[in-house]
Image (tube, rainbow, N blue to C red):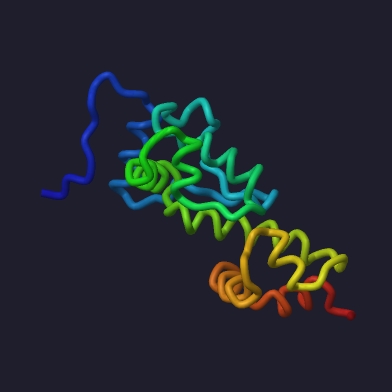
Length: 156
């Protein structure tokens, strides 16, 4: 019959909006000029019990560290399975995708400068291998880190 969600009363208006966005296929995540992926709502508007806002703050502060779904769900204070569902519902993207996009946006900022080589950038933003970094960078940005840097500095 096309049912995509249900709402339990009493409900918060933003949770209702999220259900509507899910039904029409709109993404909740937006990219802002700062290059960070954040929800289009402030932390107070995201349902506190989901722990998603805590997770987003944790990622912003610890993206350089080896971070797993289990680590972040512990910070959020909920099981990793419940957290994974809540994160995707609120953010419109799975946790691992959000973390990868966040790290790549940080890498793009660093690559615009010429202070580090690409391997150093990869490790600085939390990747364990250069190969993984290059694959993820290309998947997210559509170009290799080398080509991205060349576009930022065409006269070099």
